[in-house]
Image 1 (cartoon, rainbow, N blue to C red):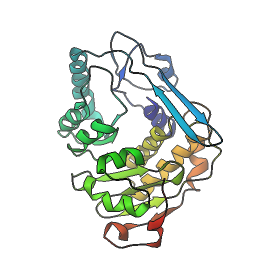
Image 2: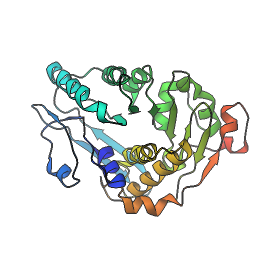
Image 3: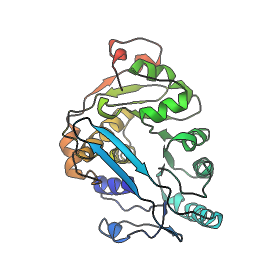
Image 4: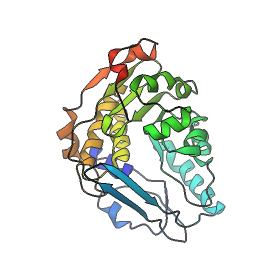
Length: 284
């Protein structure tokens, strides 16, 4: 939901949303003038509590499970996707899933979406990410914790991350964007790679920063930009979200304010096996 709101705020385009929600407050989406298609199910929304220590920048997450989704509802969702997705250039599969939904759901959807000319962005964790990658989405955006879980390493420097990224790219994932929180982010394909260090910000709210990054990347993809611009757009959108209280999302003004402040470094030689001084950069 946050990612779609972020895309709408940045691009001023009409989109539809396919996610699992129960008793959604639809008026939030009317405010953005979005075209959407929901699958509503009985039950309640889950409650997620985020506690951010401003001084230490430590975020504690208390995430509940929410209501259960039945198989019939999942099949209904898939039928909606089959109907709506052919009109899309980008499809985003993001977040956790409710009780009753198998961890193969994103992999199943990615496999089905291969029949249309749409690029799939996968932003998930744990087994949802692992099984989704097996179906080769166009782009993934894990954070460092999620990335380390997938590659089975404890990467602490930029060189560590680059050395292990082939474990993802060799599965026919076109682009991997890994976020390092306050330490920035990197993006790479088999042909090129870039790193951007994090901006010094007065962080007010961490929730939604990852969704904002996906929104920025999507904006660049929609404009036909390369991966260096995808990284800059993603970082700018994320920064515009971090300086806002609570769950507020980056808007176009915030995006524009930070875009020119994002500086990228070409680290393409590192994915070719060359060591660069920047490789020792600590990213956690």
